[in-house]
Length: 545
Image 1 (tube, rainbow, N blue to C red):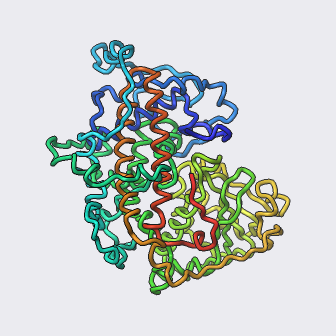
Image 2 (image 1 turned 45 degrees about the vertical axis):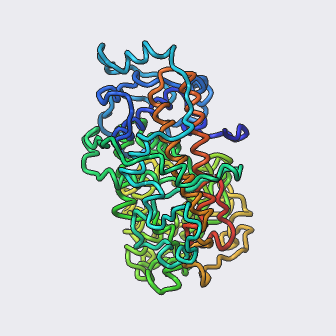
C-alpha cells in the first residue's frame, strides 16, 4: 500500500489520525454532494463531526505518536483570523477540543451509525456503477468517450496518422474538454484489455437526473460545477488525490468550510484565470520554436531560475539569480506564466509515496541586486500563488547575500507575504550559512558550492509536440483512467458513508491503492499528452510517485 520505510509527515493520507480522517471525510462529503454524487448523508448532518466515523488504523495512530512533528506551525494568514464556519472550533490535529453543538436527536445519520454499524459488510468496488458513470461521464463528460480525440477501440482500422496531427497536441488554446484525462499503469498486461464495449456501452443513456447541490455551502453558488469538476479531475498528476485535498485542510487550520472555499477558489483560478494545466502541458517548446510568448521565453533564456538538487530535508531547490531579472524584459502576464510553469515543473519533482518529498525550497540569490531588478508585481503574484493556490508546498525560502538596498524592496513586499510563508524565510550571507540548509555538492560554484554544471536552455525542433503518438496504448490508458477514477470516487462514497471502523478501514486502504494507480496511470500517459520541458530534456524530471 505504501512504503513503510518512509517517515511520512503528519497530516498525510498514509499516516492520518482518526480526527484527521474525519475532517477529510467531512470535506469530501461536501465536495461530492456539491457535484451531485450520491452520498447518503443528509446535508444538515454534514456539519457535525459525530456523523462520520474513523477507521480502525487511523485511530491507532494516537496523538503521542505524531506529536513530535506538530502541524500547529502549518498555518496560513487566513486561518488565524475570523470565527470557525464549521460547527466546532478545532484547536489542532493533536489536541482535544469541546464541541459547540451536536447532531439533533432525530438525526438520520446518527441513527444509521447506532443501528447499522454491527451489520455493515465490506463490498469492494469491482465494477463502477451506473449512478457514478451518469455523474462522472454523462453529466460532466469527464470520461474519454467525450474527448475530442476519442477513437472507438472497437474500430481496428483507425487512422493513426490522424491522431498525430497538430490538432492532437496540447497548446494554450486547446479546449478544456479536450483535456479531461488522467492515466494509470497496471502491471498485468492482460488487465489492460478494457474496450469501450466493456467500459462505456453497459452504461445506457442516463435514466436519473443529476442534481448538483451548488448551494450546499453558500460560497459555492458562484461557481460553475462543470468547470469545477473538470478542475478537480485534472488537479492531480503524480500526487495523491487525498493528499492534494489535505493540503487545503492544513492550510486553513482544519476549518472544513474554509478549506473547501480555498480549494474551489484554486480550481476556478486554474480554469478561468491562470490555465496552469494547459501551460505545463504545452511547456516551452511551441513558444520558443514559433517565436511567441516572448516574455515567457526571455525569462527562460536569461538563465535566471533553475531547478537543481535537493536541500538537507530532501526538498527540490529552485535557484533564482535576481540580478538577471529585468522587469523591462517581460510584461507581467508573461512573467506570471513563467512563474506558474516553474511551480508546475517543481511539482514534477515531488513524491507522495516513495519519498518524504512533498515540498520545495526557493533560494533567492540577491548578489548584485539593484532596484532595476525589483519586480514588485511578480513578487506579489508569487506570494499569492504560494499562499492561496499551492498551499503547503513550500519548504523554505532562502534569501542570500542581500545588499543594503534590498531593505527598501523588502519593506514594500513584506506586508504582502503571508505570515506562514514569512516564517519560512531565512537570510544567509555565506557558504557556511547556506550549508546549514544545502550540502555544498548541490550548491552552484558561483555561490561557493561544488556544482559546476551549467544550465542549457533551447528546446529541440520536435519539442512542439508530445514525445509519443496517440496510439492504441494511449486509448487504453485513457479508458483505464476513467475506470480507476470511477472506482476511486465510488470507494470514497462508501468510505464516507461507512458506520463501522473496520469496514471503513478497508475502504480507506482501497482508496490509497486506487489513488496510487491513478498516479502511475498519469506517468504512463504523460508522454502522450505533455510536451517536453527543460527538465525532461536534461533528464532530471524522472516522474515517479
